[in-house]
Length: 198
Image 1 (cartoon, helix red, strand yellow):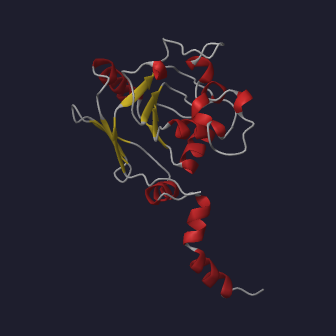
Image 2 (cartoon, one colour):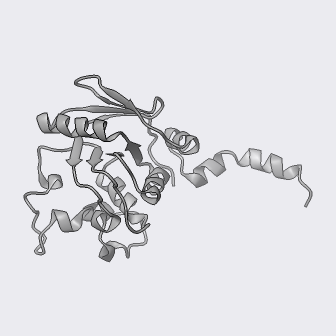
Image 3 (spheres, one colour):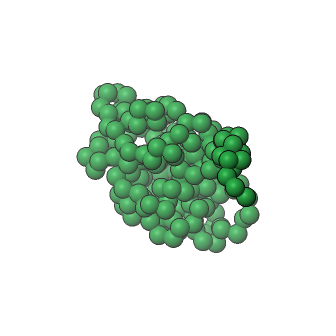
């Protein structure tokens, strides 16, 4: 399944300065029964967002109208725990296209890259600058440039470079998942196979 191309994202951000956010907190296990990648955003951080009677919890950031945007900024060690793909699906389905943290669990990072969510790992110092910028101005904008592999606080121009696997970067720039990539080079594969003995 192809996803939106990712090149430059300019957006406000939602702050979640909590460390060790695991995949069961991102999407609780009881919501993993669906067979399609739809509707998971409704249950993103379900137990943090809603009371047992389904009323929104006033203190949770996603229920605070002053925050919004396509960037989620999490604390250190974001996406730890089980390997469920549904956690990345929930982040994407909610509307986030980028998650920023000072450290990601490897499986969560790869699941995000596979579906069009860009995990941007920054230094602890730069992460703190981001949190402070949002605290000072909830409408502060950030620019995430995948081609340049940079994230910039637009108000100050402060910037940091992030790492990304070259193959995954190319796929995100083109809006490809792994199958789209293979379909895009199918003629090369046929040509390669035609030169090989059966």
